[in-house]
Length: 471
Ligand code: F0G
Image (tube, rainbow, N blue to C red; front, side):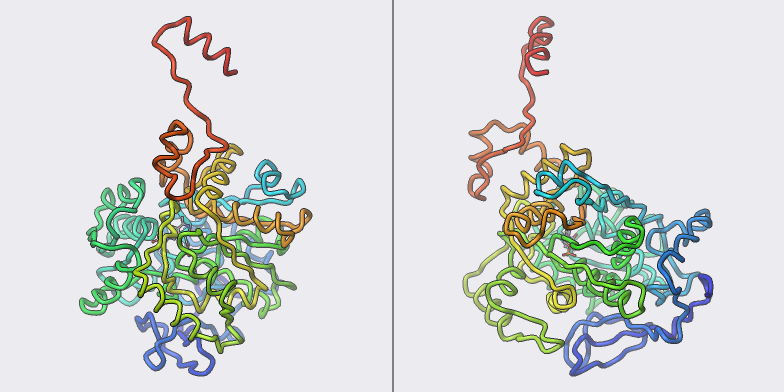
């Protein structure tokens, strides 16, 4: 088995997703779509000629070399499974040091037996979300091809991550596009602090996404949104770390929130490749959870029968749905602002992942999201609203009998609690009337697990009494 550094980049290439097209491109080209058919691109490898270990436990030996940045990174210590980059070009800021927590309290809330619910805490990344897994990979590709500016549209986390890689490495300028209104202050503050050129356009994420594609093309700026296939290579490692924490045993379920559908797509690719390489002997099932106010995948997959059909998806279903959205001028709307997306760019890759992982899709309400988020917090972890969609979705699937009490379930907590303190404080402290007034229009009327602040006069006796009454 070869060591890090023996990987030759000519053994990696880019390939159109569509089997009918299958056009390939050099790994050094900058593309976000296939020239011939407009489809998404994958990073593909000539595995037969690459040094792949015969067992996943081989990766454990990297721990002994954790003083080396490429072994310490939770992404790059799996370099052999994303071998597109020359080691000397890799840009790492220590991403991927993320723990998998066995969390029985949340498991009980979901309805699982003790010892069955794990939360993968991606909020522990340097910029506070899972995005750093993909950003280190896309940024490395950008650096390899000599980019000096990198751009993204974002609901806040991708932009925070890009801004951090740019300012920490001093290799590129970050140009970020955000919609007006919905970005949480935690995320906006990161982009501003890290010095990103921040362009706030009138419109929502879907509008910003369309514009950033046009602008990047026109100005030759490197695009790091998850249409960039290198991003997804980095995000595969979230699953490698989950397996590592489970002593390389495949869980029954992976449950993940769905926004632009990069994560779910990357997870499917990760498991497919591990299976093809003989490194795992079975596939987990995948559940992708939409917010009810941004439920394109749910609508298409569960209600309108969209399927990947082994590379021949019934795309007319998608075109028809998008035409309906346009006709109704429909805009996504959810308190989980990170996943407030109606036109997920990775839709085709995600339905491929759903096919290969026998997947299901569910939608959960803002009420269910906020209650699940409070349960995550009350059990010693914290997450932003979008992340809690995974827990709310697992609970729904358990109640529907799709997930069994004895199944081993991993929910991905995609972003840190402090990303969106406004939602948390509103849930816990706003009095019930005010809460209903502010959030009622979203169908949120009850903060079931609110930990309300006790209001008391500035008087010692009253303070003591209040504490005794509430202890
Ligand atoms: N959770 C969080 C915290 C996110 O920030 C995002 C996406 C998702 C889930 C959805 O992941 O797109 O892979 O399905 N945030 C993007 C952004 C869109 O701009 O930060 P996905």
